Length: 90
Image (cartoon, helix red, strand yellow):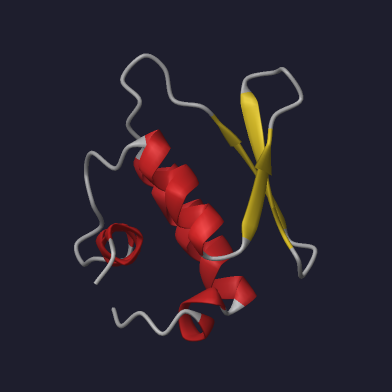
């Protein structure tokens, strides 16, 4: 299993992860088909080919996601059906 697959499983673990890093989120979102761009502000936009957009503030200074950010990312991934397409079991 690749590192990206392990990060995806970690994101969807129960209980939800504490200490999930911003860089790991970018890796996971890219893995499941989201593009990532920042227009110079504090927010990154993750956009999927289905048209779903997720705006998320970068985490400073710790670099760790807050629980609501983990939930938002999981919801976005589930809404695109990316978990089924990538065949990663929970």
